[in-house]
Length: 82
Image (cartoon, rainbow, N blue to C red):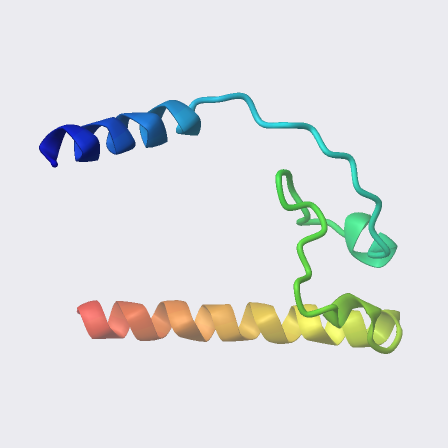
């Protein structure tokens, strides 16, 4: 049992350092790809499809709301820790 667990753990470690397969998929998130702040490896990360809702001003409002909420969350965490 210990040998099997050790082999499974070693296989997982070996798989973690294997080279990734390059799959080039096109996305419909052209509005997100050109915005500042989008970095690799998640250049156009939008799992809920919010970038396709509304217009450019709607997307800018979403980004401003995200920034505001992240700042409030950082202050709340600091207040909790202090």
